[in-house]
Amino acid sequence: MNLESIVINIKEGDHHAFMKVYDLYFHQLNVFIKRYVHSESISQDLTQDVFVKLWEKRAFLDRVSNFNSYIYRMAKNHTLDYLKKVSRLEIMPDDLLKEFKFSTNEVELFVTEQEYFKFLDNYMKTLPEKSRIIFNLCRDQEKSYDEVAEELKISKSTVKHHMVSTMKKLKEIYKIFLP
Image 1 (spheres, rainbow, N blue to C red):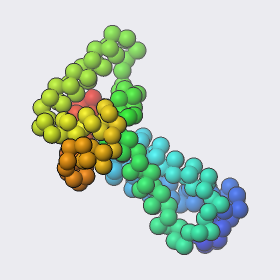
Image 2 (image 1 turned 120 degrees about the vertical axis):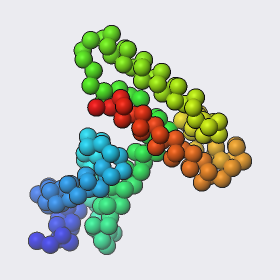
Image 3 (image 1 turned 30 degrees about the horizontal axis):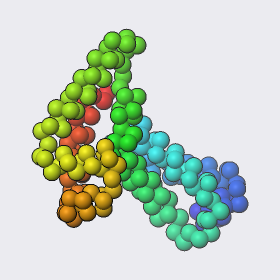
């Protein structure tokens, strides 16, 4: 059975055909996504999400001319959406705390959490003023890059550059606290 006929069967609700595509693509998509997120557990979660979306949108598969491109585009878009959320730190603190390997000792948990936030706060003070302002507008005030660019009278690409640079540096901090 070729990929085209498998995709047609998925569109018709065939679970076995879906599992064939899952088996065929899961590892490849997981590796692809992991290049962006640098975390096995997060990449597996995002890959699972892609397959859930694929199943939910199976009725539209007849519009897809190249399934391989389609599923990779789904994976890329879903990953970029996740990274946008992370860049605003909308979900990062809770996710980070879940990823920490704490003992059950409440005091140790509190101390480690406090160390993390103190370290993060100290780091934020070392950022150039413009980067700090842009980061706070995007993260704390949840403004889009366009809104920040307009408010500060700078280009959207400048806002993006500062956010990407800051997030790269923050990744290094997270590596200290993540196992």
